[in-house]
Image (cartoon, rainbow, N blue to C red; front, side, top):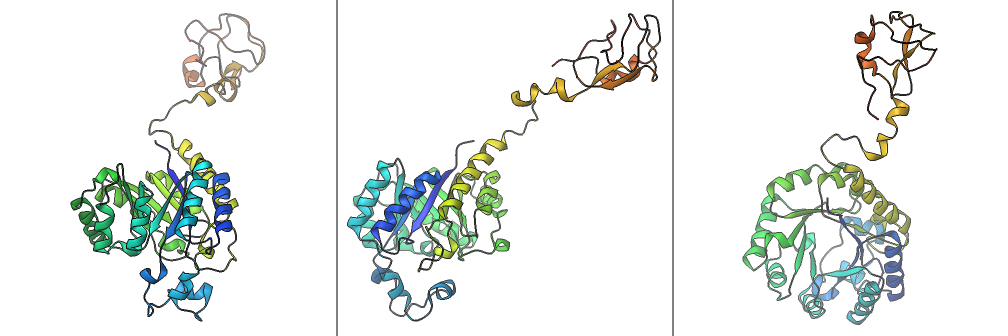
Length: 346
């Protein structure tokens, strides 16, 4: 299988602080991700003055300020994003950002961004979908997150993207639950299998908002190609998404776990592997002399038994050996040999 593309979703967890954002890029690289992702927006173009906070935002940031006031503090200026983009690439990371307004789409397009993540909240935003789909960028990919969406809504969004120039092979659909953090009972990893059937011509990924890294690792056997996880340096930082994010240590374990499971999945065929083949002689048994046996004696349950090593006559031939006449002398524990039988292959 191809390696899963692992994205550290820095999002707005930098809290508008360039130095913190830069440190996060560095820590994400150490953890072993393939890419870092930001969120690019102008708060006053994203949120109206009357928009309420989400319940999870109130829980972690209080209700003294509006959603607009809270989000203004999380903006990352365009020029600072450019510096972070350059820094991430110097470290060998891919970097991209999710735009939340039309000006930010234009800015990221001016950076020739190849990968475009459409967040769950924009899945039903027709002019937004059209604008991204129509961007004249070579080798453009779209990552479509599907939190809060029905299958019919996902099909509607895909139809907009396809009818405006996208190809199904260049779109990845992310299974997602838009609650921060998502309770484990709502993660619903089995729906990924349903996605693969319903949207068989598309690549399928997972945007994991559940606590820790368990669900991310558990999603690997479902055949995903892309995974993203919110990332923070400290879950106690002020801001709406830190509590639902993983720390650098957890992100490292997530990456290690995904890579280990990828290797462990193997194939559907049951094989004797190279690593275990050498242990067959040690772990399996052969028919051996239970006591001294003289030439001409008959093999009986009193004078033969089974013991390691496994390079003699297989115990699966037990009833064929019983009653045969010994062709030579044997001492206790000596492997039984007989012209009617061959030793086991090792």
